[in-house]
Length: 370
Image (tube, rainbow, N blue to C red; front, side, top):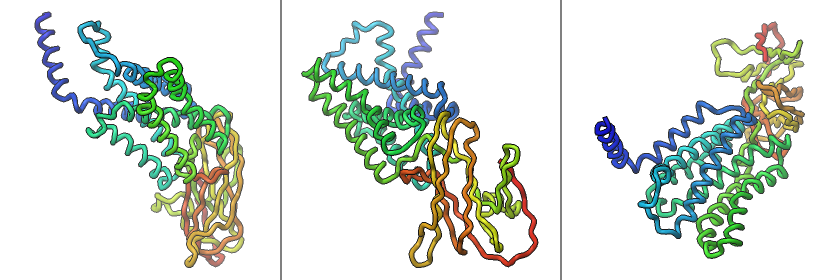
């Protein structure tokens, strides 16, 4: 029996060595898929603890790798646990990176319109793909510290707004400080206690993490960082919105076959009609802040021009999201766009609709509920 087991183990190890170059990418993908199917609310205690666990594992492995660089490895002195650790540590790190970055990609994607979030996720995707390129193998540790810095900042961008209950410039700065603190503390320790390694620390930890921090600052100035943890779960255009017994009634003329429209995105306005834009926006428990509905009309000569802004106070905690709506009574025919924005101008979502003036005539509305 022992002979059979040894033979099977030998065959398995042979397969492992044969496909060794592909295991990091495979475990990264496995971590990504694992998180896609298990992801929870951004303020879920389980989700927070999972992220902390992944960060501790990645940080622990990378720190050990950093300090081991100056020592000559002696595999003969390793025990069974150390041998397995050295053999599978890269797969473990890639799994944790995959799980973390899939979470952040999903959370950030939910927190903005596709156009805005795509630019941010393109940066993340570039980092992820580059981590698998052979040309980066010689600089694998600096690059992994850069990815760790990325994950720490993303974690902070999610957690600080959850803790303070709002978003904005000061909250972003606090998130950035919290995100860079762990690696800054590690660098300070090396400077004070292991000064002979500080030059290596600058190349492998400080410079990569500083570049990631700079990228986040630039993206924030460009308003390309989605306003996590907010996310619009639903938005539509309606002729009327009424609230009865805690339920919002949404009235529209959209025919059943135009199922891809949310309400009256082809708005036929009779005299006296008002445009109602209804939305449902998720925010964590204890969250309280303002958003604004920005109304833009497409001028044939000047393009999109702002027509109005409607501030709306939102509060968090409801599983299905905070419900609200804005009303516009003065309008002109043409193509319209309504953007849900934070007070610092970052876009959460948008909806387009075409408005036509119509003569007064009998009509029948369909009612949806939210």
